[in-house]
Length: 224
Image (cartoon, rainbow, N blue to C red; front, side, top):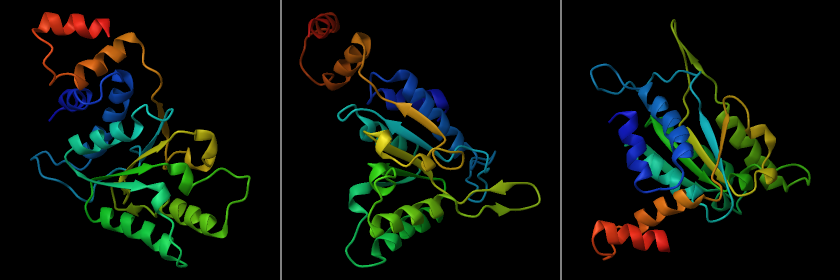
């Protein structure tokens, strides 16, 4: 599957965000491509450290951040895991940190892989106010996992991380330390759609509805 086909697949399910989907899909596609050998097999040890490791998707509640992230990961046809930041925390001491570590360790054995993190600001809140001791420990562990040591050989420097697709409805509530090279080095915003974008969404959600012939269907959608 080439990049154009990948973008088209995602757009067929997530209409209205053409430029944003193109940006996100391009980053993910190039991440996966670093693993592909010329013969079509997968090189599980060869992701260049210079490749982007993560993107932050922002936007108001209901703009489709989580859905877009999941469809991008799904259509890339590689391993992906969904993590809700609100479900990371456990009452037993150390369990939250071990849970985070176990996810990264499992994905590191299945590279290339994508980790979709919903509500990332819950894991990495902005300071102040000073969070609880538990939140501080989880925050520290998460950054340590993102900053995992690089592996070197004679030719390249390699990363051991999955690609991170993180979402937040309130970027001001998130620690700015996440937004840097090697962590989440790109931000994409899903905003309120224009009329043409809303029409694209309507075409997608209504494609299985009996709205008559193509011309009648378009007339109906334009009048909604």
